[in-house]
Image 1 (tube, one colour):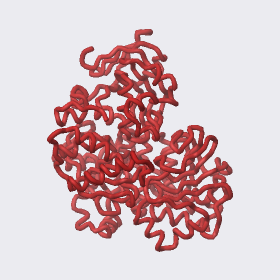
Image 2 (image 1 turned 45 degrees about the horizontal axis):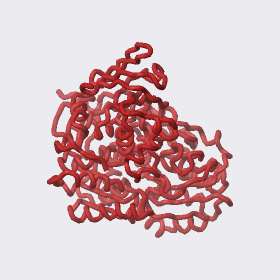
Image 3 (image 1 turned 90 degrees about the vertical axis):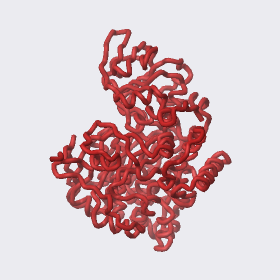
Image 4 (image 1 turned 135 degrees about the vertical axis):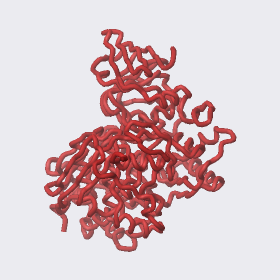
Length: 422
Length: 168
């Protein structure tokens, strides 16, 4: 009889064509998709140093120009051009130019990420693909190049952690708050090297967008990948994205699989949370930091710039004005998100309240615009607040949900969104 | 020096140093030799100017967390250090090290056992570190043979192609 297996064991068995994998084993897997963002130029430069090398499965390559775009300098324009021309010349599966948005969101919206698949990406937040029941993990750029050539990459089978979420989120409380609290409690290496499986009634009730926020932030626990079991909501999302037979490779963990750690969280009593400078695990309830003066608010990033995030923000900002002296930057996660927000009037509400709307992409989260001067503070919906990430080394970054960000933009100080929510 | 056994003077940084502080975002487009002059500029301001070939970097918990930028590992290697010994590594940094061919060792207790300037004897395959000043020997985690083979070859590109990779 085969022992009960976790999602990570099953998915790596499928991708390596082996069986009986135990945590700690190293195997060569055939990833289904290789994502490289603006760092694609580094992959290409490495590839070009391999005389005679060819690409094994060009259709598995997805390039997205999301960081540092549109090009701010001639040097970066050259890198973008290198990627654009390479993609055409080698017939890569898909190339998404500077108008597309953040790689993770673009690939999921376009139906390129499917349950049970292994996706590697040149970005640590590739854990987000777990929102669709896939195994997503960040790797380095020469690992992507090596995979272009060989079609395989090594993976160590991780141990797994199960996080079961139950209860109902109170008004003004979101998946971002659940994750910030979890990161605060477990610390930044609380799930280092682990596969994190999110289970429970609260998770299965969440939209795909909300599951993305969970899986994205799992990276800030040190996780190798994250996972939400695919269900009717997953398949409906994928069918809308044009995927035929989305359940084809879907994998569920076995009953009785072994976890190194199991946590059960009832989120009903949770209040909005804020990660304070300068680490993501320095987390406090909003009530303890309310009143902290802000110079800038950033609504963006792969964690929280999806359509429903913009809707949450607009529901607070509509008909109000951003506080004098505070800059509110809104960077929609993708072109589709921006289009949807334009069509529904969400974008005009944001513009009318005084927000700067930038092109879709990583924006200020990746240091592309939105820098702070010495002594300034930003409240951001992104996933990282390390010192110097947004301008001066002597500036502060706070992380919170889009609702907390919107409420704080109106008052100019960190504000509990429950005080303002309609 | 045989098979990833090193002896060198150590530099020290604390817990949870993110890659953003190994190489800052706005420096990633510089040439590698230029980036190397700014490595760890805030976490240990004396490091980049004072580091000598063969020195060892000692780090605390979850070294190299945050962005998975492999350029951080390349820049560290470009400073000439022989290896990094840490309490633990963030998983993206751990992968990047083998990808690039920078020897690393997880040795819990190393941070408390050393002061900057100590001479360390590091045996990566054996998973051991000896602190010369005190004579203390720490047993760290052994590296998987598959990964040692990748280190010996000089990184993943060298493994895949049997070619030696140059930088940039």
